[in-house]
Length: 464
Ligand SMILES: Cc1cc2nc3c(=O)[nH]c(=O)nc-3n(C[C@H](O)[C@H](O)[C@H](O)COP(=O)(O)OP(=O)(O)OC[C@H]3O[C@@H](n4cnc5c(N)ncnc54)[C@H](O)[C@@H]3O)c2cc1C
Ligand SMILES: NC(=O)c1ccc[n+]([C@@H]2O[C@H](COP(=O)([O-])OP(=O)(O)OC[C@H]3O[C@@H](n4cnc5c(N)ncnc54)[C@H](O)[C@@H]3O)[C@@H](O)[C@H]2O)c1
Image 1 (cartoon, rainbow, N blue to C red):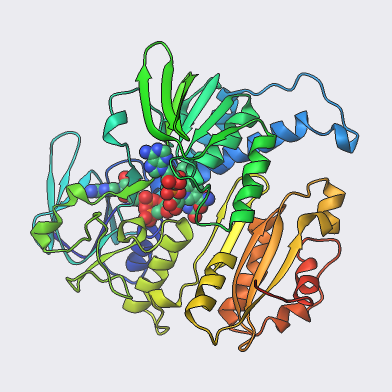
Image 2 (cartoon, helix red, strand yellow):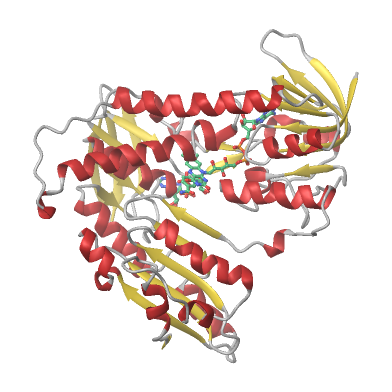
């Protein structure tokens, strides 16, 4: 049996850089992939969805620029071409990773499904049936996650985030189950491509992780683009004949809709079921996420779990940060840990939403629990941002929360043009652990959205 210093299962956002690091350090490393190289982000997550978001924005701008004095006729959306562009970007990434791997003499790439035989040995099942067994001193699990398909929908012809990206014709009426990141990003993309779009959400509260005023503003933005959103849709039943027939109850009344396609985006689960973790004695929680410590070691100290499968993050930037923490734990002088990470994310609707740390509702809750804590807020609607007015895109708002005593920023929510970029000024100050006054007293470039961050920090209000 071939023996390695490190075996990595999965070529996700943590696995590829970690394999490269091991190989560059002169260690023998094996990396195993059962599907397409590069994982979710590259093949059916961030990269393809953001190419679609870009095409959708171009279509929207082309069709809706009369207010800026631009008139166009006959804007056509060619989904086949949009898909081809996406496929080419993905194919180039595949070429890049394969070239990287083939240039590393200490690295062996295995195409196949890895699973544990014992706490140091892995079986690789391949399509041609020629299974292999390898051994590793350390093993790194980076297997990501997959879409949850509730039992009641398993027999219908549904779309997922993977299969929707293979369509070559725009659906007439796309019904989306689940109003999370995936559902909402695709809702706007396909509405902009020309689909009628209906989103069904079980919860009464739309986007319950966000402040209510922010969630309401996002709903307004999407509804302005003719997307129908039903919250509190209970007892959703789907029957497929020629069309997708949906019935659900809302406020005690039965409602019926017919669609041409249905996308299921009700959440994701870790890819840990087929790993035979019990043979290695690796523990998971009740939802299948692998339990890890601050350096992503499992209960077996030589086995690590990185990325979505450890349940500590569900983003590419968190998976990559898992890699950085593990790399420094094994090779580095700098000792990082999970607790150093400040949670941040964006939802790439247009205008985008970005978040770091806590929001207003969480701040109020913290003050309720700790009577000595005083949190103040800087607030600015985008309609009072010159650059937004000049661009004619004034939806949204910016909020920054500050601990009055320590002067440290506790969190921010930006919804509006460029929010996915402007939030990074705030993120960096939080990592630097500096007072909010560092940004307040900085000079920013005019005319930008960022120039309003110092201005809004001049005016802090108590939270009520
Ligand atoms: C539609 C969509 C859009 C997204 N957009 C964003 C975004 O804009 N920004 C963002 O930060 N995040 C986004 N995400 C989330 C992001 O894609 C994931 O958080 C990220 O890819 C997780 O990386 P990972 O390292 O955990 O593993 P993954 O990228 O999921 O890779 C895991 C790999 O392991 C392989 N594998 C699984 N089991 C085995 C096995 N037994 N043997 C061998 N190989 C195996 C899989 O085939 C896969 O290739 C999006 C996700 C989706 C679904
Ligand atoms: N911009 C980004 O970074 C980005 C984009 C897409 C996906 N992702 C990642 O992918 C993960 C999964 O995304 P997602 O949108 O599938 O999940 P999600 O957890 O964000 O949203 C799922 C939604 O579906 C609702 N729901 C659950 N069961 C339902 C049912 N039976 N019927 C109707 N609604 C139901 C939930 O209440 C929730 O609002 C996210 O956690 C995120 O980390 C990130």
